[in-house]
Image 1 (tube, helix red, strand yellow):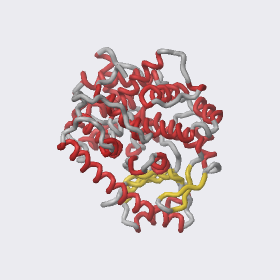
Image 2 (cartoon, one colour):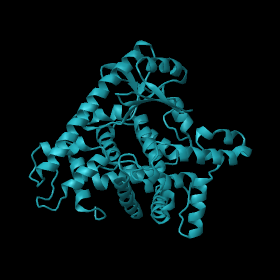
Image 3 (spheres, rainbow, N blue to C red):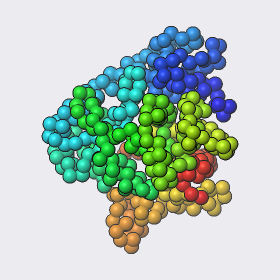
Image 4 (tube, one colour):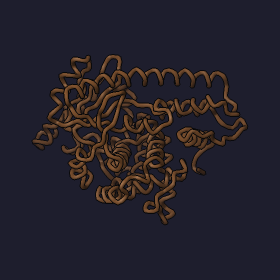
Length: 414
């Protein structure tokens, strides 16, 4: 943990201990900045875990003001989670009553690994459904007051004036550039197991498929922007709960065929170094360089916030990575080329809104103009995000650092 300061180390110790219902051994002097801990806990959506630690009355110095702030955030978070979870339970009951099979994904399953499910915050609900059921689901959701905000090839997303967003996925992963992904997707429905969510009888992935999906999900988020500390907590708990019962050969075979062997190995090393997770023998590493990569991995996660794009500069750098796809930009010429790839992306990189450019490449220049005009008039993006591209020095530093890390994780090629 030499790469981290005392506050970052303390936050990770708190999370690592609380998920195991233990008390961390923190410094008893005044060196910990609890304001920093509070801000980072909010950024990474782990307020319940941090406040749970404080409820154990540890011998640490924390001001009444900061503790009260954490307490308020904790109460708000728990109340919101309870309200949304009950509302989502009603959706699932209506789906099951209509004989629509549903597979609970991600947080809906992972929250049950925590000694108190409310310690695991959620930002939306994700379920896997069969494509032929989407029309019936759409009618049901509209009858319950939900509005469809996104309809893409891979999923439908619904929002509500009061309750949390719900996403219905036709496939497990929106990113389709993993080898052997289709075979994995085809077998998922054959392997499902019964599961309960808020009293509703639904389905979930079998344990080995869950392990594969968790890695796929983290790798996809890592490429697009990053993820927060919560995912390291999930992976640690999943492996300590089910690591000895999953089919390790099947897990390794799929991970290797999808090109995620290096990423998975560094993931295990990182959780071992920072969360004391025991690394299975088949994922241990003799290459000392991977331990340095693991440290950079943790730093990137700490900087990312819960969803990766925690600042306008980082968001723009990640967009540049997506549109350029590879390579660091150490010279001015390369930086300009990377910016041009963001402003004038290839047809296959264009959003579905400009999908006509994929069907007819002659329309690509028109699609660039359409995209530019759309970005100018969008009201959900502030002026700082729109002009972040002109902060070339800051963005280039983030771009180069993330580009190198993604190459070292085996997620992009140079």
